[in-house]
Amino acid sequence: MADGEATPPTERPLRSATPEWAGPLGSSGAAPEQEPEASTPAPKSEPATVTVGPASVVPDAPKPERPRRRMPGPRQAARAVGSWARRPSGRLTLPGVLLLVLVVAGAGAGAIVIPMTAGSRTDAAGGTPSPEATGTAQAPDALGPTGIPTGGFPTTVPTATPTATGAASVGRPADVLAGWATQTATKVDIPWVAMQAYGYAELVLAQTRPGCQLRWTTLAAIGKVESNHGRHNATLGTDGQSAPRILGPALDGTNNTQRILDSDDGVLDGDLTYDRAVGPMQFIPSTWRLHEIDADNDGLKDPNDIDDATLAAGNYLCQGTRNLSSGTDWWNAIYSYNDVKPYAQAVFDAANDYGAKSRT
Image (cartoon, rainbow, N blue to C red):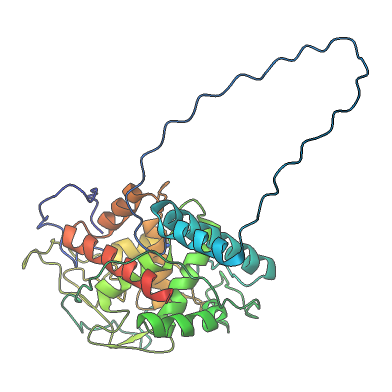
């Protein structure tokens, strides 16, 4: 969305030129904490030099008995691991370890399908969509620990694979996460279709952009603040489409919005004069064209489809060399999505809340 970036600790004024609806609006399973200061490494000791003289035979001296070390019991070990996991170092490290196990297991079984590009979607009836819902979704609050998808991943792969021909085929790759999504959706109050989209985007990006380390909770938090997971004045269907389509107000420079003239001939937003933010992740048409992707294997790239929009948002957040396990990079990524401090804080709070609830 907006190009401005900031780091969270410094109080900054809101930028009236960059409202919530002025770009793609508004995985770590949540926003990472501030990075711990690096400790000073201990000086390396020089290796000891041993001079070997002529060999001589000496009688073996009796070896003193060494006290036997008691290994900690299972309960003690579990408590120690749990204590470490609650510390900042554990909360930053443990999600990466768990995700690595999941990705290796899923990739080995062929369960993760990497989407390819395909044709763009136009209105099914041959026309252009008309403006529907406007307004800003309410930002959730509460602060909790981080989280990532930690279980329930199937080991089977869909029969269909994404194509680059523009022809639709059968099989939604995110369906491989049905078990995990159904279980987690109940805990975090997110539609299971949206949960599949968020989890699938994380696993795809773990392969295509492994250095980014984006977690599903960050994507879910953006989806929450932007459109309540495709449900802002709409209903999210099992096909990933919101009915009616979610559109932001005209970006005409009034009401604290940025003035953006029409860039898509109204194809995506139904407005021939100004651009509007589109879909559950609220992309403006010009930004969508840069990051559009077909994530659900239907042969189309559609910002109104929560699968396509979520993976596109992930690619947007992971631009350049960002590592979202770094606090600085995480905040910069969110500010690039929407350069408004209350918005970024709402995403942070929601992401942490989802991480906490997903582990209950």
